[in-house]
Length: 193
Image 1 (tube, rainbow, N blue to C red):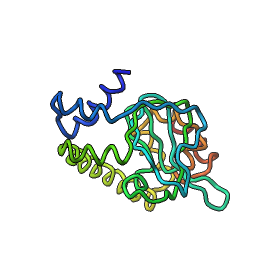
Image 2: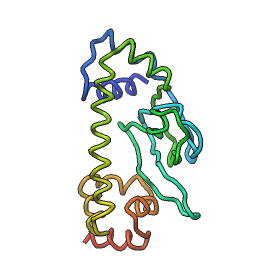
Image 3: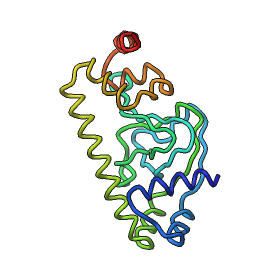
Image 4: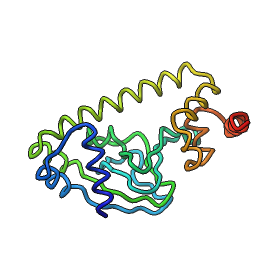
């Protein structure tokens, strides 16, 4: 269990250093969680109650339209997860969060985080820098989605996150890149040669 908390502390301290006494206050608000594989953690139309730090497992964010699932992203060890816009605004979600493997880690509720902002002002800096990182990543993703060819999208994925092909099912990666599983499989074979 202590490994989970150390991972969380290192992640927070990438943006904001914390004294031991401050960390003790932060640590007390993050609680362990465990979900089995295939659990719909947050469904479209519900309000996200928690912000997650993943220690083990795999989650995916997706929405459904016209009977098809469209993957928005994946989170795994060392990542934060949740339906972030719903969590921050405390409004119903437009998409779903599901476990693709048994998943465990730490989570904090919206109310607990709001209370920590008062007790630990440094966390506002962490949130600001975290949001910057999210926005930069979103900008790259949108640009790629709108302008890159299927080959360029696949190459970017394999260059930036080559390990993901080992942990995320191919059909979900194909959806994430906006291509058919057949096209994804063809590119994977080409990349391997």
